[in-house]
Length: 106
Image 1: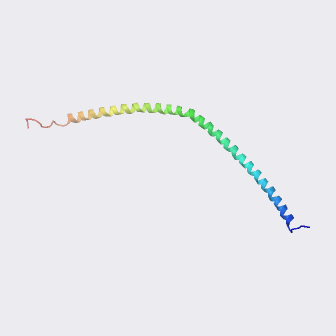
Image 2: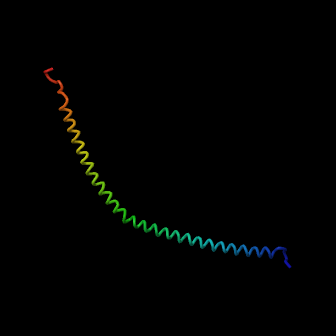
Image 3: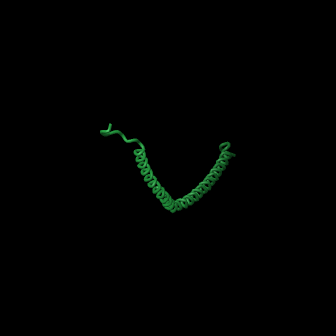
């Protein structure tokens, strides 16, 4: 006979809840372990990309610098050509316009 009515059911329910709680803790440990494994895989993949970028960046910079070096020469030649054309145009306009009257003949 129970000293307190319903005590055995409460103790049985307590054991069930403790077992369920322990199972939930184990599930959480497994899930955290899986997340850590995924994070490590991601980190390894990122490390590989990072080391590849360390090698690719200088090569890309060298290629870009060579490309701009060629275009800089073209820009310099273009500006020289523009200056020469402006000078020739001014000379042509000066030759084409009639002489101004600035002397005793007026």
